[in-house]
Every structure is written in C-alpha cells, then in structure tokens.
Image (cartoon, rainbow, N blue to C red; front, side, top):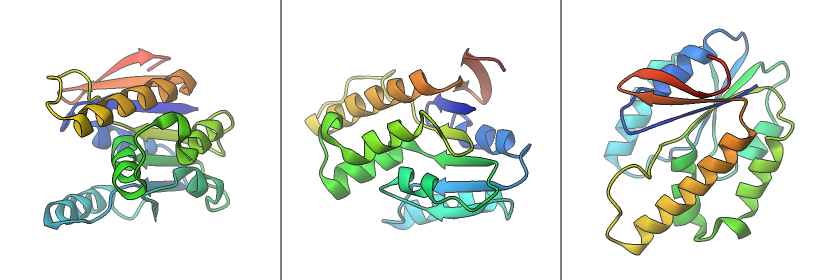
Amino acid sequence: MITLITGGGRSGKSRYALELAGSYGKRVFIASAVAIDPEMRKRIGNHRRERGNGFVTLEVPLDPAAALQSLPPGTEVALLDCLTVWLGNLMHGEGISDDSSCVEIESFLDLLSSPPCDLIIVTNEVGMGIIPDNAMARTFRDLAGRLNQRVAAKADRVILMVSGVPLVVKGCS
C-alpha cells in the first residue's frame, strides 16, 4: 500500500502521516531534510520530538530509493518526509533542473512499482498559489508538480490535507 499525503505548508501532513504510521509495528522514518541553517535545525528537532522513539530514522537527503532498498528486516512501513525537500536537495546539491534525466527520481519511481513494505509519502502541494516571480522557483514548482503527479499515479491512496483535515482524493479512507 502506497499512501501519498499532500497539502500546503502547515496543513497537518506530517502529523497525519505519523498517525497513519502509528498503526504499524516496525516503522522506519526516511528524513530528507538537511540542517543547513538554524531554522532548519529547529524544524528537524521539532519533527524528531513529534515522532519520538517509535521509528528507526534514516537521514537520506538525496537517494530515498537506496534507503528503501536497505530497510531493516521486518520493516512494516516506511514514512518518507518529504518529496519536495528531497527535490530541493537534488536541485541545490546535484544541480538538476530537468526531472527526465534525474537518475535518483527515476530509481525512486521504479521502486514504487514494487515497494519493499507499505509506504507513506509526504509532499507539498506547491502549484495552488501565485506563479513564482523567478525562474528557479518556477522550475521547482514545475518539477514538484510533475513528481507529485507521477507518485500519485502509482499510489493506492492520495490524501489532501486542508487545515488539518484529511480529504481522500484517491482510494479508500
């Protein structure tokens, strides 16, 4: 079962993902964030406190497919938080500007055809607001939109978070 949870900033995506993962026994949290500044260090600390000790945590900023292929034995669910942070890492760390030539993205999407366990994937919905005023932000929005569409197509369930309320867009609740 692949569940994609999307929504705007502070919509409750991560909290809801943790709730869904809470029904599983052996859980792995795949964190894509990198502590590049004080604000990000604080956000990462807050996320760590929110999830507590109930997860094995893998910090994987660039290659979640490799992390998913090397999960601890017996893993029942992996929660990846989040696709858009990972995409930003690829843009800034690897210099990608075109998703069609990105090996990491293609490897991740290929793995979704036969995941090693249930997956809960968090992403940001970035295309519902104003059109960004600069080329890099527009590229990010476009790449994120296409990545979200491709993951949603493979997901069994897609949930849109609105003001902390989960709305099932695809699949069963």
